[in-house]
Image (cartoon, rainbow, N blue to C red):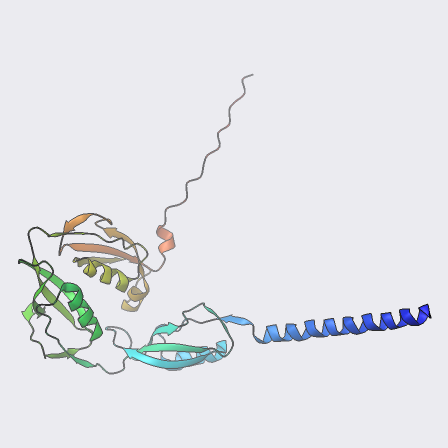
Length: 268
């Protein structure tokens, strides 16, 4: 057996294996760079031209999939996006955006009398309307809708109003069921907190914003860092709950207590 010939073939085989290995690693590296994830930009409150320019720079694509009507927000501006800002995606990913309606839409006010409070809120929201104030009146059934108002005056079903109009509800209050627990609102967005307050048969009281919240658009993106009364207090239905909003809730989190090390002095 020719040992030199065997070693020569073995060396050749090892060389081929190394070439194949490094080639595979090179191709894998190219593929990984090609599919490298990028951060999704924040398109909120941008006009479509502004959002499209930013999307082009970030190597993602925009698709307008829906529109809503948000009072006081710039018409045609981006209201919501999916995936959300700072999500990690591949280049060329489609970002689905919802914009604020350019023209004000009219909707018909439903007849909510006889509904439960939860049913009435769900119906209002499904039509693009919002709940204003809860006005409680003595009745045998708590949270049963007795009437509906706008601006302190009765409003009949079938009336056409702008999307986003607040409808006040007159609801029943039984003397044996007149209190409700205050929900925990800490960390909730403004709109989610409002829904939680109404869902517990309470009203939104004062809205206090810190210096980071300077516009209505800011308030929609802000979160609750404090509330009055505190969570789990039991108060009368229809009572107001004051919420404090910020865009930087981390500034209001209590600092972690650190254990102080004590050293004993040595007696001389």
